[in-house]
Each structure stands twice: as structure tokens, then as C-alpha cells.
Length: 106
Image (cartoon, rainbow, N blue to C red):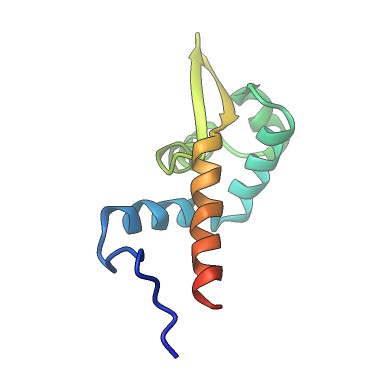
């Protein structure tokens, strides 16, 4: 049975790389916890994220860089602090990718 869709993307496309970065970013328990915190407190200051998750500034910076680069989180610098919000476009992209995979199984 052929489940391929006529509108499917090539196996090697720029979007595939973008999707991989999204799921790489989501593939870490700490980053998922951080994203849940940001979802419940939009605009949260990095200082509060640090306090909640008991990690060093450099570790937080690493995690946030992956989330921001993947397009899942937006950051806004305010003096020495950064405020984070979820990026609805990135979240939609992740959901859309999963929906496309789910549809391909039908």
C-alpha cells in the first residue's frame, strides 16, 4: 500500500533540516520543562528560569539558544536580562509536522 502523498516534500529539503532542529530542541526533558514554564508565564525573565531549574547561566544559555534557533521561543533583551515567550509560529510548525506524519500513516 502506497501512503505517499502527492504534496509530500523531497526527502532532502531545507524544511526537513528545520523540522529536525525543532525536534532536537524538544528532545530534552529540561528544555520541555523550560517551555512549559514559559507557556505558563509568557515574558518570563531568564532570572526566574534560572531560579526554577537550578542550572548555571551558561547551561540555560545553551538550552535557550537551541529553543530560539529552532524557532520555538522568542527572546527579548532588556538590560542584562532576557525575557522569553513561546513563538506560536514555531509551535504550529512542530504540530503541523506531526500531523503530516500522522496523515501519512492512514
